[in-house]
Image 1 (tube, one colour):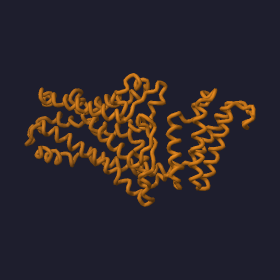
Image 2 (tube, rainbow, N blue to C red; image 1 turned 60 degrees about the horizontal axis):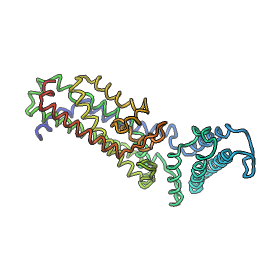
Image 3 (cartoon, helix red, strand yellow; image 1 turned 120 degrees about the horizontal axis):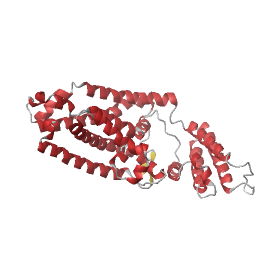
Image 4 (tube, rainbow, N blue to C red; image 1 turned 90 degrees about the horizontal axis):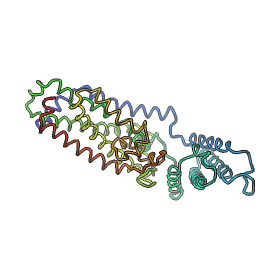
Length: 371
């Protein structure tokens, strides 16, 4: 096996596909840094201004009435008015860099929104306000900030916040990237079988070594993300204990470093899943473009048709965009579905074992040799 790995490394180290993939990771990381700075992503003041305008839009759905405690406005109208006042206080607090006041006002807003869910005519403004799950997560986050007397806000130009932002949106792109990278994992060998037979190793060992090397490059891609992001250290390191809002069967908070660790684990498991699926598709279809086509069909179906998630909740492709599962997006679908990435991890591991059995069957029947 070691001999097979040496042969594989000699071949793969000059493969342009690997070099291009490594370069692509660096370009994406630096491109995201530039995007954050150019578009001022993560500027909470801008987000709160947008929140305020949504509140104004919600109030416009009602006739102008007296919003005082004894006024003739509806309970929902009074609640929305209080929300807007609270959001205005958040904007003022951010403008003055009074972050303790900002967290307190944000927690008050979340409490008001929690009350609003049960008020008459709420459905009129539901699309302009956070969902129940989003609001619960917001309340938990801001309450912890208030309880801990936090005096700062997260800055995406710092190392840990940048990594958190990167991994919080990586799920969608990661599947596509690894699909492209592994889409022809066996095809070159099928096209040059006489050359492969001349290698001083058994064919099955050579194929296994290719998988090990491809997995090694996947780990290199992830390591390169961390290394490329080191540029942001000049702005600061950030707080590894900063809480992150996630859904793990119930709303909860995890630390930034815990979220990043989970994301890396999911990316590794997803990569193994994609690689093994690419091997099977290469054997059956013998074409890179057909392999990619099947990958994308299976990946985009739950996105284009969300009802499929409730019909087949444990379809492994529901979990490929792991960030959406961690954010609890399926819970807020028209037909609410409670699935978590911990369940997804179990599903993917089971699928990986099944695919390994299928690939081993290909070897024992000689199907790969004859492909």
